[in-house]
Image 1 (cartoon, rainbow, N blue to C red):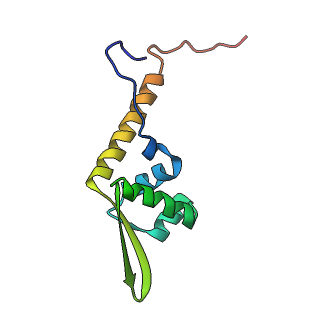
Image 2: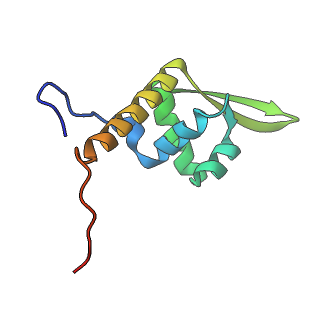
Image 3: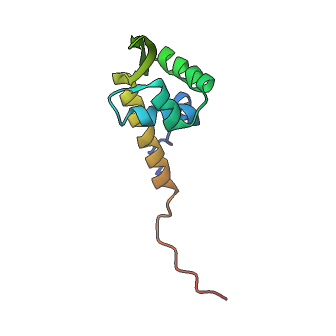
Length: 113
């Protein structure tokens, strides 16, 4: 329960969308990742992943590097410093929201009919 002097948690709508949250969560646990790894890790289609990455790049949360490795195209994605900060803040807000939903006092156990 919120105290009168507390503000309610605010969730970042750009990050909270499930596909983007999955992408940013994966990227927060690695230095960088290629497109196929992200696709497998998130379960997103190529088009959906590409669309989400474009939005995240436009917002300055990820960097995307396109290159060739052994003559094959490779797309590499990494979190920016801003991206690292915003995903950490988002998870902190989710944790705060979870804590606020817990009862202040333990409820007595239900003892049946």
